[in-house]
Length: 355
Ligand code: TXA
Ligand code: MG
Image (cartoon, rainbow, N blue to C red; front, side, top):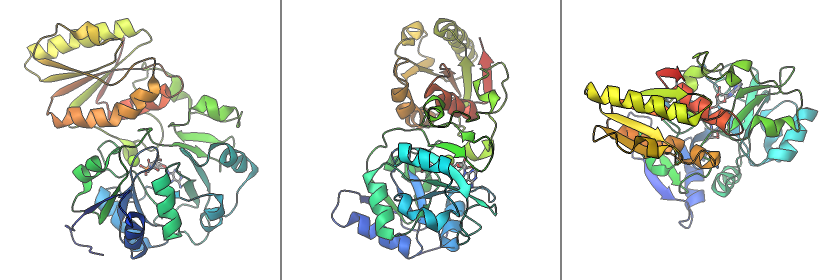
């Protein structure tokens, strides 16, 4: 595979005959290829090929020292990547795999240091996507894969978004259409006591607690905006700052949030900024008469957070492409998927306002 700064990136429709074998062949030869999962697109490499994994870091512009998730086709592949599967892991695997839950366990000796950033833990998950599963099975080895975006942009949920970031930098994109969930997996560290959520994600914490009652979620995640603090955890890894300045307006009451967004939109537009508002079906009416300086995009409905999660990154990218100066985003209640949605919005935000 080429290593130069510009390679020819092929887009392979997943339903084309021989598509999986073709992309698996690229990966087996040390190439790097994006593939769909049920959460977002991943950028995969053979986890045991350190040179290929190094190309993944380079293509993303991802700082070294940040570990990657190992994607397996099922529990039968675990022995290749982790040293031990403790009882708590067995319970979670039984309940959530294949699915958007990543477990941090002790790594197996054979996993190259670059995958785990030199640490002795390995993050592992089994994606619930037929194309991802078929690809891993055909390669016959775990795939080390971060989200398939350039470092600093939102995770991609379509092959087109992968190409927007990585065309010329990776060998192939296996196009399986838009991903369903649109938010990344929940990452749980089982090497610490009590088990701890490192990144909220597609599996809500409340759901995990049914199986892991002592699961710890760093308190800041539930504190609302007053703290304005950056989310704990590997923030720089996940930062999805759009080119526009994103201002997140939080608050318990949707009406007050909308009033504050409205007020700011008017003020910024009057000062000559091009302003986009990320609204919801329930609140969009509040911005009806804001005039031509303000564009309103509906990201979904408050009563359907799964829909909001599915559209969030796609909408952020689309709005950012339009070249606005300021994006005003409404906050969401931090329950269920709302925790992950707010985590991603806070990471993207340059400023957080509490109403
Ligand atoms: O849904 C997802 O998780 C997507 C799809 C492609 O699987 N992947 C993804 O990967 O979001 P990435 O690299 O963008 O985020 C991986 C997260 C980061 O927060 C990283 O710090 C954490 O998992 N992580 C990976 N390996 C780890 C390890 N050994 N110990 C602790 N955290 C780890
Ligand atoms: Mg990522």
